[in-house]
Image (cartoon, rainbow, N blue to C red; front, side, top):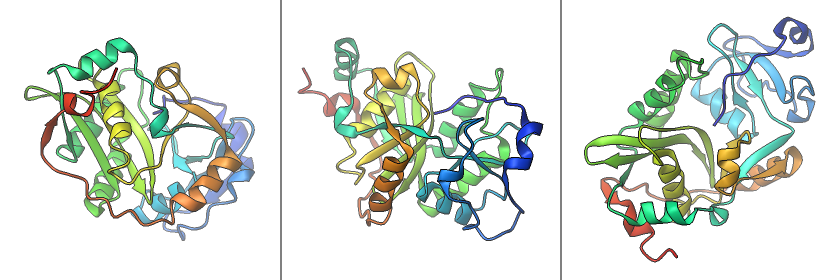
Length: 254
């Protein structure tokens, strides 16, 4: 849930904690050591192994870099989060969800969701590099990464993907192939959060789109404190298979 970033890279390298590829995954510095400019930049290097990625996300750190850069790791001072019960949908969106336009599935086409998220940002640049895409597909195979797909007939209309660690969902990206596709995906995620064992959705960086849907800002210390509790809790929820009409989740919505 980010956009491509640019910054005066050469000026910041000397200030960053460098991690060689293959180094122990726990080699990250304290997130409170993240730079103020560019805001939230914490470390450089390392790799995208499942072990390093899981260690990083548990501590509120995520990779975000362009294809022509080394791996950059971030932990912003303020975090965009969505408490599932705070999801806000406009009346028009609720009418759309109560209609028969959309069905949803979970983990039915993870690879295509991440591919759509990358391809739709390709012209302006995307941080979802082939390397990062492969890493998340591997995480999906281990059961850590999940996707929610929105379907219109047999066409993928939208989706969202991210990591689930404990009771936190770390949202990575979402897309729309038709109007309201990404909103529907996030709405399904928030509406089914209780059944999926999710208590907090990390949106990483703020946007007007997310704010309209109910996302709010949390300072880094408070966010990391939440993760200390959420990420150690066992999540025994079973992510269901098959397709279901979205309207069933919102039939009673005003």
